[in-house]
Amino acid sequence: MRKVHVSFLILFLTVISISAQELALVREGGQFGYIDKSGAYVIEPQFSKAKSFSEGRAAAEQDKKWGFIDTSGKWAIQPDYDKVKYFNSGYTLVLKDDQWNYIDTSGKALETVSTEKYFDFEGGVAFIRQGEKIGLIGTDGKVILAPTFDAIKKFRNGHAKVRQGEQWGMIDKTGKLVIPAEFEELGNTFNASGVFGMKGGVFGINQNGTFNPIEGADKVWNFHGNSSLTYARKNKKIGYVNSKGEWVIEPKFDKAKAFSNGLAPVANGKTWGFINEKGETVIDFQYRDAEVFADNGLAPVKEKQWGFIDTSGSLIIPMQYDITAGLAFLSGDNAKGFIGDLARLKSKKGWGFFNEKGELLGNKWYENAEPFVKN
Image 1 (cartoon, rainbow, N blue to C red):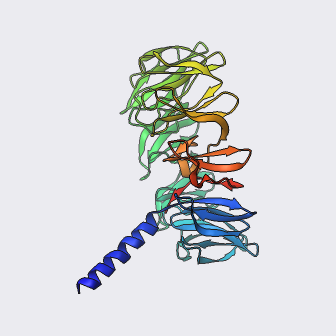
Image 2: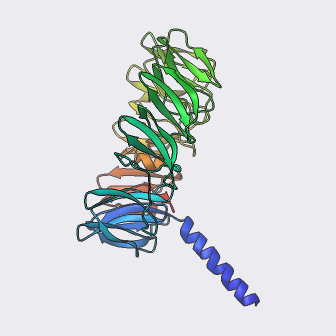
Image 3: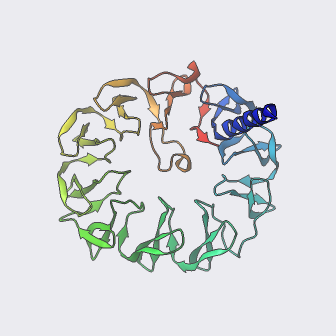
């Protein structure tokens, strides 16, 4: 009996390990395959066209038809479709005989209410359109929010910007208005620190139902991550404000980006450096371009090409590569450089993955490579 229990445990852990692995789509010799984070092929290159994994399935083409493989490379859904999308919330859109439909990871179709256009599921909801109005359905195919809005934008952090007439507000995934539709402009990212907006021609920060005007601002950007500051423009210069709409760092920079790990890239003229939340220069102005720090404490910086520094300004990866934003649906928001513990970089030799020590994964370059995704 003990042997049975041990065998079952080993099998269970193996299944968990396989299902939790991260795979990246790469092309070698003109064919697409998939590698794991050791750099080893889990699925050998064999497809002329393929897409990254999403929810344990990856789209691949065979004889000009698309289907889906599982993480072992076997067909989970036979290639029978003209076009396919990515799985999200257990469903994907597929096109067959000029008709779009939702299917689950086994290939079973989902019955939904009538819609004039099909939209991808995201986080358990999908848009429906009836006439000129947009609403929401859930993964059971039933209406969550009847089509009442003139526009609904992409959900971010569980919330989406919506338009009624000429005014913007924000809803959650139940369709509830969490920010009334009374703004001429509104940020597209919900954040605990607030959402910027413009009301009556005045820019400010909306937080917990209170609108806090920003003195003199003519443009504001979204709050990023868990930072309590975001950047705004006044008289053609950029500084940083808090949730109350107060200028914490006076507008004196020509360009700026978000705070992360307590530092933000800013530019004076054509030269970039990094400041702290007091506005003090921490890393000197010396780069032609710079991006925000990733969670691992590394940020892309550019001279002629891109490399990576740590928060002390030490160069970890030499500036001899190109960086890419990757796929928005994977990274969540066009993150450049490191996504998780690896960065996808390009050289004259092709595409490769670098770890936080600046080491090339598998010491290998590929004709093409997409970011690693969890399955």
